[in-house]
Amino acid sequence: MLVGMTRPDDHPQQPPSRRIAADLRKQIEQGQLAHGERLPSERVLAEQYGTARNTAREAIRLLAEQGLVTSQQGRGSFVRSPERLFRFGSDRYSLKNRATGLTPFRLEAKKQGKEPRIDVPSIAREVPPTDVAERLKVPADEPSVVHRENHYFADDEPVQIVSTYLRWEEAQGTRLMERKSGANGIYGRLEELGHRMTDIRDEISARMPTPEEARILHLLPGVPVLEVLHTSLDQDGEPFEVSRYVHRADRTGLLYELPVEQEEADQDAQ
Amino acid sequence: MLVGMTRPDDHPQQPPSRRIAADLRKQIEQGQLAHGERLPSERVLAEQYGTARNTAREAIRLLAEQGLVTSQQGRGSFVRSPERLFRFGSDRYSLKNRATGLTPFRLEAKKQGKEPRIDVPSIAREVPPTDVAERLKVPADEPSVVHRENHYFADDEPVQIVSTYLRWEEAQGTRLMERKSGANGIYGRLEELGHRMTDIRDEISARMPTPEEARILHLLPGVPVLEVLHTSLDQDGEPFEVSRYVHRADRTGLLYELPVEQEEADQDAQ
DNA sequence: GCATACAACTGGCTCAAGCCACTGGCTTGA
DNA sequence: TCAAGCCAGTGGCTTGAGCCAGTTGTATGC
Figure 1 (tube, rainbow over the protein chains, first blue to last red):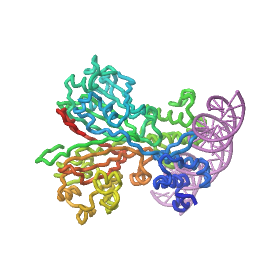
Figure 2 (tube, protein in one colour; figure 1 turned 180 degrees about the vertical axis):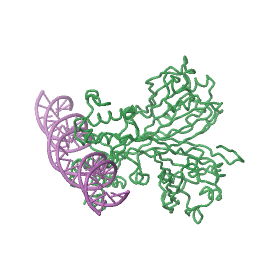
Figure 3 (tube, chains in turn blue, cyan, red, yellow; figure 1 turned 30 degrees about the vertical axis):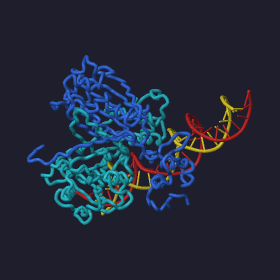
Figure 4 (tube, rainbow over the protein chains, first blue to last red; figure 1 turned 90 degrees about the vertical axis):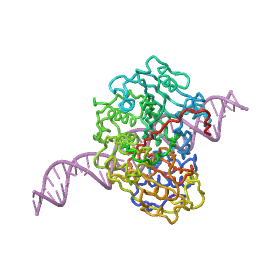
């Protein structure tokens, strides 16, 4: 009897493909199949379980969907090794980092010994998406924003896609329209326009990537993305910049450290 | 010619299943297939594209994996409607909510007109997972914690799984070991033990659910989970509670609002 | 009027076979 | 020595067939 192979009646009305997947999952979790190790080939699995190759294949596909294994044509299927590289902290916007002269991403990359690279595929005046328009307080039915699209890499591995939206009326004719926006990046220019970043608001969600995102980020099946819709508020509490971050979730985490609001007499915040 | 059907040479070396999936995706994005609408059946799609049923089926599976459609045996495949219900704000720990006498989840649910329910499947002394042990500053090789597992529901729909870990030496013999922990929940009891929640630290990641989580949360294929590893720090900066939140990402988002640290002379933070 | 039974659909899952593209180790020959 | 070529093994993708289980509308019979 092979290790980790269950008797058919352990999983009564489980279809064979799920049963094989469950067996393999157990072997991975219990370490009988180590990280990076090769799984039995589809043809071998099929024979071991007395099923068609398609059924064994389906089992491996299920595990790939769960982000547990990954297949390579001509080589085999392998147990995926967990790796969490980037942790974007809530201090990434902190002004104290200004002293370094680096933008938040470059700073984070350097901290972790990675070589950062930033591509700027496009900078264009556009009609904003409705969620961005709402948050930036601009009309959603006219080209009221400048959209800067950035792709971020660490050691040439794509890490995140960032779409930054600024008010067209403010960005027009400034270095905010250029690829190289000058010292301290766009926040430097925005400060010169009278916007000191005072508060931020990050709305976080997770979803599966679009095929387009999967292509740009080199995503394997079973890897979701973290989407952060970020709003910067200035000293007057007015939004002056909205960005949509799309992170690959297998390489990225977020970290928020914050004080807890303490009890007060009658702070009636709706 | 059917709407949205591309000529084969639009996608040169795309395999048929991907081509069908891309066509359907386009039809969904352009609104030719509305939210909730039924897709053509597998057999019909196969005939339209001149492929085997399995190939059409594969196309639909690809879309399901991307979270775009969902299939129901005997009924058909349908365009999934986006719905984001719960938004957990960073003020959910705020002490000012104490006035309501509700725990954060109950408060959030009420705000949104949902009926909250909390199951407590288990409360037990355990050996902590290593990531929890690190953060709670307890030994990882002995039963040094109490693990409270909670399942949260809104209108009987499962929303999140929460595992809370407390120091065994503190929780032992108190209401922290009971299902009903008293006024203001466990935070009320912890405060009596001298821990006033002063800062929090949330580490956020996203991944595909385990089969177990998919079962508890009723997750469809193509829906990731948001995992939040939360640490509460007291007035002395000491951790006194660690919780792992597993949210279904199709119904849940997170919101963090925080002030930006302003520039200072030489705040040499690590 | 109403419950039952049925028929025609739907997706779920499997089979057995085949061809393709890619990998990696081995053999061959210069 | 080393490069080129071969070949066995791998996953990628499709075919066409079959059976099952769940759904829904319709016809039947009480």
